[in-house]
Length: 293
Figure 1 (cartoon, one colour):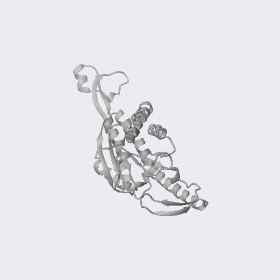
Figure 2 (cartoon, rainbow, N blue to C red):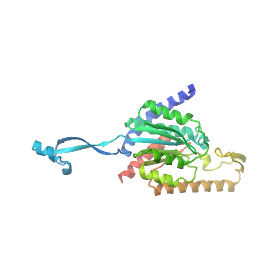
Figure 3 (cartoon, one colour):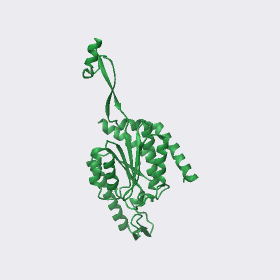
Figure 4 (tube, rainbow, N blue to C red):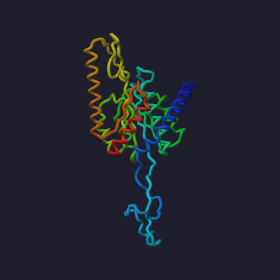
């Protein structure tokens, strides 16, 4: 049962998200995610400048004047939100943890999708598949997805991007627009990512917390891995410790970026202290510019 506070959070998120979607994102979403192809719509009289290859010769012969076939984009898409709900998503050094950011970005994508009459589905994963919601349309369906992301209690604590991607490959027989939302603090997912990228329009959404990029000077602190429970005492005042950590995280970030580039993937990076709406707008603008080049 949902608490009053959670209902207020979801309602507040819906109001904020729909305002951004109606003002900015819906049109950008439509322009960068294309339909499955072109479908015949009607025939009309030929006008100078029409493509000769579109002339319908059977109708032209019957009517004794030129007619052309008119095609429209088969717009309806299936959008899949593949969202990491492992224990590391509960971490947050700012006012929002990564799970809350995931719910917010999923809401923006989902409301953009239904504004364009597309269907939206959800796959929640940790080190296993936790929950699957088949694609549907409508406001109540989107609110259910947001609620699931915010409230779901996973059985697993670890992260397996491979599990989420492999499951998508098995169940999504037709091409989808897939938003993979995770902090990507996992390994051995390159092969699964490559397979999904070949079949689907895949958009990695990387959730980043500032403390996962660089240690602040806090003296001697006890750290615990949320997924494994491993504890470690670290002297964060030691510049060598902070330097090694920053170097390791920078290396991971560079390797991830190179992989996305190699697979020709347009990715989004969402930092906990940044406005996620602006990051999505920036992504849509850059993607539209790249697609037009």
